[in-house]
Amino acid sequence: MKATAKAHTNIALIKYWGKRNEELILPTNSSLSITLDLFYTETTVEFDERLTTDIFYLNGEEKGTDETAKVSRFLNHVRKLTGDTRFAIVSSQNHVPTAAGFASSASGYAALAAASSKALGLELDGKELSKLARRGSGSACRSIYGGFVEWKKGVKEDGSDSYAVPILDQKAWNLSILSVMIESKQKKILSREGMKRTVQTSPFYDGWLKATEQELRIAKKAIEKRDFEMLGETLEKNAFKMHATTLGADPPFFYWQPATLEIIDCVQHLRSQGLLAYVTIDAGPNVKVICQPDDERKVFQTLNEIDSVKEIFVCHPGPGISYL
Ligand code: ADP
Ligand code: DP6
Ligand code: CO
Image (cartoon, rainbow, N blue to C red; front, side):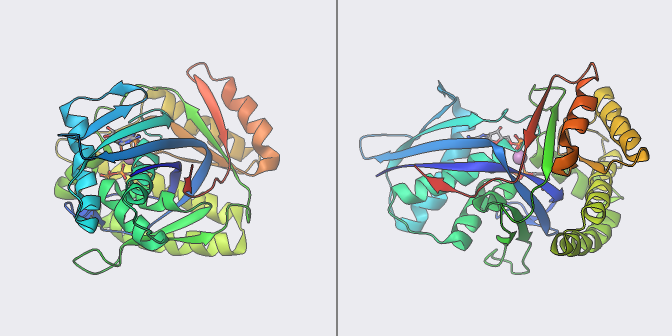
């Protein structure tokens, strides 16, 4: 009745931005990510018939009704799969900043899906686990696997064909992903809220959808050919387009801060000197800089000189889910 799982976060190279079904968490577009070695969540779930409600601890602290209700809603999906009615104690440690644009929802719900299903004796394969994790947070469905991962959006209304598939092993292509922290505070507009407002109100959203399909094809081709320049150019364009959609929303919003632009500028300057480094940004102000391992030191040192940079985490492709 008790199990512990570990899941790593992932960074999207081609972003998931928008849902076609909010209840089932079905995306409007397919996306592509790299699972990261450095950031992860460890979650223990224990079902117990003596409990009268679910209890959720995050980083050693018991969470209030809102956060616990989200976890309960997720556990209901798992309980439904087995017919079990017991409540659970969930205890989770984030080795990643929570709700700060470092994808804690990805590692958090992937770990919760693995631990809770295992605790109830379900032996889910990768596909089923990915679909379950998706119900917690879309990006979590990609964290089931290590390395390069594609979340196929699927076409079915019931979501049965919307899950992640591994496209390249963790060890097959080593890249450096420098997670540049300028701000570790929680974001103002959660990803869920931000993408919903964008889908509903931004006239730029159609342009995003059209471009992203094409960019996904190019990114996959680049990965197949191990063409770093082609991949880098594509992922940077895709991230900028995603952020551009938020400016067209009503009310408009954006995740960037002055330091975000300083880092983008610095990376573009490095590129003008012939060094291949590219940026991507999730729903927050922090920037992830992607380069080849040979350039990692130079990129690190250059970024480290910027005053507004608080910390740089040097990541590489990481593993999929594991049980402890
Ligand atoms: P992030 O950029 O960190 O993914 P999101 O806004 O997508 O930010 O998601 C943050 C939310 O994910 C948190 O408010 C919380 O509800 C949920 N979350 C984060 N970590 C965990 C965890 N370890 N277990 C369960 N839920 C988590
Ligand atoms: C910008 O997976 O956090 O990071 O499905 O509503 O929980 P929900 O959102 P979430 O969104 C991630 C958005 C993104 C891009 C990405 O990771 O693909
Ligand atoms: Co998230």
